[in-house]
Length: 136
Image (cartoon, rainbow, N blue to C red):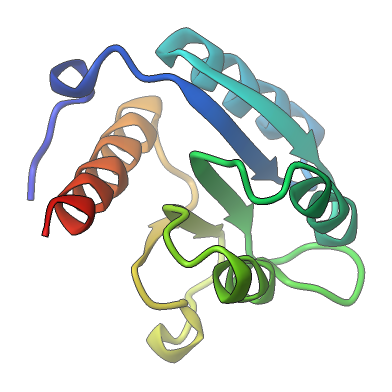
């Protein structure tokens, strides 16, 4: 499925980004702001989980790196979030190859390094899939 982010604009909502690389985290936050998202960024999943609980799952998108410091990896964070709020769209990223069984259901995997165009296309794809699920 090849989708264009411009077709989905305007996009609003709150995204949670979990990425331990500071420069990439900042770049993702800036890109999401340009698209129309507000975002909360974290370098570990435990802090992001505390935030998600505090906002009672009011989140439009989760972007989580798999290899994170601490005990909770990106895929586990997404699973925990989806147990409570199953409709949150999610993207799992990693610079390493990941076994498909690790990727949570209805989550798109984006392999690093990726371009901003690939990032935006992945966001468009996951949001479009989410809209189709809501309509059916």
